Every structure is written in C-alpha cells, then in structure tokens.
Image (cartoon, rainbow, N blue to C red; front, side, top):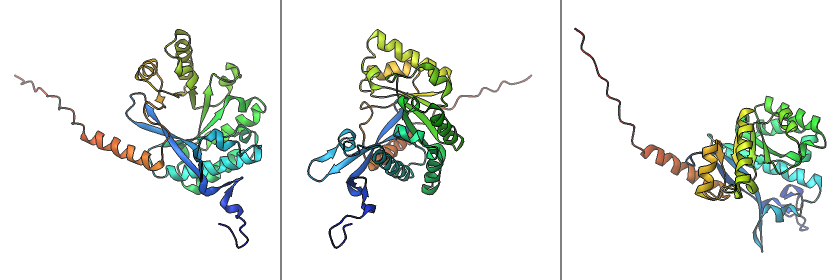
Length: 274
C-alpha cells in the first residue's frame, strides 16, 4: 500500500516487485500409474500489469543479486507452505537458491518458518541443484542433515546435468532424485534410455525415490513406469496450474476413487467334515 506521498511500503514489496504481482503455480507429481497426485512443485510467476503472466526466467531477471534471490526464496517458501495447508495428503516441493545451503543458519530458519505456518515437516520437500554442493560441501551437508532430522525431505533437482561426480551422491543425505527433462525428451534413443535406466537403478539401490520431469507422451510414461520411476511430472498429466485447480483435481480424484466398484468378494468354501 502506498502512503500519502505515493511511496510503496517495504511490506508490500518482495525485492523490486510488488507482492501483489507475485503468484505461485503448482505442478503435480503423480504416482507411476499416473492416477494419484502425491506431491506438487511450487513455481513462481509474475502477474505483470501490462505484459500478463511472466515466466520464472523473466521474473528472475529482476532478482539479479544473491540477497534478492534469497528474499524471493523466503516468500515462495512461506506462500507455498501456506497454500499446501489446503491439501493435507500432499507434499509440497520448493526450489531453493544454492547459496541458501551455505548459510549456517538456513536449516534453523526453515524449521522455524514451517512451525510458524503450521504444516507438518514431512510434507515439505526442498529442491536443490547439484552445483549447490560444490563450493561448500560440508556446510550444505550440515544444513541438509539438520533439515532431515527435523522431518523435511530433500530432492536433488536436474540430476545428471551438473558437474558433480557420483561420489558426491554417496555422501549427500538425499531423499529424492529428479531426472531432468533433457533426458526424458530423448528417452526414445538407446543412449538416453540406458542413462535413465541406470540413474533409476542407482537411486533405488541407494534408497532414494525418483521423479522424472518433463513427461509429455504416453510412450515416455510407459517407459518410465516400466523401469521403476516412483513419480512422474509433466504436461502429459498437467501444466503448472493454480492452487484452486489443484483442489479441483484432488476432488475429482476422490470422486473417481469412490465411484469405482468394490472388488467382488472371494467365495469361501466350507468343507463338510465327516
């Protein structure tokens, strides 16, 4: 809100952009059969007054310093957690700037925010890029350990596109790997299919869940389900959409589930005894 001199209060701004222009969309991650929403990823957008809805890439051009990116992170994290209170059976996945994990107080602040909002800790999943570990591996790992001890889950985003070695993966306490869309796009080639299959097998062997991003065709869905991906995300199922639309999708999912006929009872044979 502007004061009498037309100056906008800091409380109405998130960095250089009005709070009222920021919006979150949510893209579902479905179970491998494509029928049940298990998680939603929060994605930032800007509702520009003249240019309409701007993508995250266009929005982030305004957030060109570490401090501004981190300020936006905290807005997204709190807003995503508040919206997720509407969906008690879903987890919410939130992208976090790499530098946050190098801050020794990051985990403590995250856990305090979650407690303040009132969402269960195990319903919050933070996504981090591989490159976040390279500059300060020990501090990033310490933050992740503290978050996981508090119940928060950690996903490694865009796995396979960065430059960290597999040895990092053995040392990082990660709950989920997200296979990048660039691999899924080429899953009809032998080389990409072999890489995806190897990544899924490795992750499962390490006790991690796997989400494949960018699923756009039935053939990709079938392949990813066959090789053991736990979750699937992409336009085949839903584009990023509003919180209200997620609620409607969950209502429809429940309606379909209740409309399914109950399984026929198994006949029990009672043998007469002599």
